[in-house]
Amino acid sequence: MLVTSYFSYKGGSGRSSLIYNTIPFLVEKLNASKEHPIILVDLDADSAGLSYLLTENEIKKEDPNFFTTNMLLNTKETIFSKYAAASRGTPIKPFTEFGLYEKFLPVGAEFGLNHITHGKSVLFVPVQPTKTISKFDGTSNLTISNFLKVCENYGAAAVIFDMPAGGQIIGKTVFEESDKIVVVMRITRQHRKGTIDFLKGKALGVAGEFIPLFNVVPQEKIVINGREFNLENVRKEVRDDLEKLRLELDSQGSECRFDFDMLNYDKYGIPEVKRFKFSEGVLCELKNDREYIFSNDEEEAYKAYEYLAEVIAKDFN
Ligand SMILES: Nc1ncnc2c1ncn2[C@@H]1O[C@H](COP(=O)(O)OP(=O)(O)OP(=O)(O)O)[C@@H](O)[C@H]1O
Ligand SMILES: [Mg+2]
Image (cartoon, rainbow, N blue to C red; front, side, top):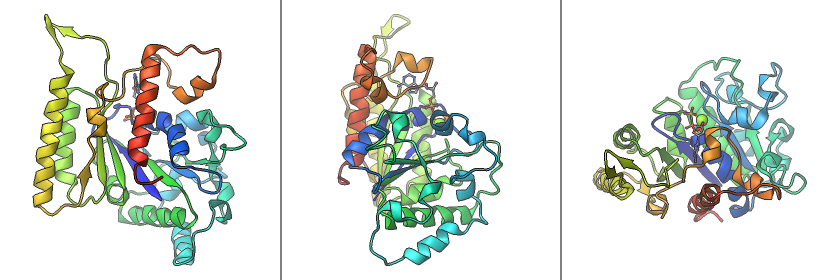
């Protein structure tokens, strides 16, 4: 089972939109199905994003009949530890055999996936923003670990976390448990410098692979004060800084790795999509709409999202 988290040091870098757009490709590349679903978790408890994109009014229900992140982070909730203990050492079963399967919200159709064949291939754990999270502490971290064990024992293809921005406490376990950590930056200085400094402090205990990338990359020529803004220099600076960091971490005995495929991508990362400045969307879903005419930026972003899914799914398909 692949565990992936989408992280950014700064908020508003486009993490949620990136997950929203890479999920349909991950379903295909990881062969996800009702029996082996992708479990998507909105961990951004204090500033929910995906939950608004995927559940419309559902998250406002006061009496949820499905699992929520609020429950997952509630230290009194022991259900996952019980299931994790009960299923320890047992052979992997299909997810549909998990006793509480009906409590997961199927959202496959929201991504333009065929709702009969793939509607239940993506199961979502949303945040209920109106309910306060009881506590973020070490025990919530244990709950996350137990939740991952349950998902693994019941044959999930992947668990994907939309993390809060910056160094919130819940991030530590997720970092440690992730096989792949997509590190999302805009091209501006505060994103680049902040991300590298943050990783310097936090990457030591990580055993997985970081996938740094630039998001919302302008594709048109930008001239500032008569000089053309050079994306190649920006990319080189970040790659050099990360390369130095990698050597530093190696010398400290860290097991973490870096995959620079997205930094080397010929569009410098995920291109800016004009329509997303007005309204979020899933390009895969729009592609299914025969009436919709794809613009150039959408076409390029579609390819970049697919490539990112390929980079994430590498070694797991
Ligand atoms: N490729 C893109 N091109 C243009 N705009 C984009 C792109 N991706 C995301 N955006 C826009 O950027 C804004 C922030 O995106 P999003 O909410 O996904 O970021 P986030 O990192 O999850 O934010 P938060 O820190 O609040 O959780 C949104 O208005 C979104 O529509
Ligand atoms: Mg978000």
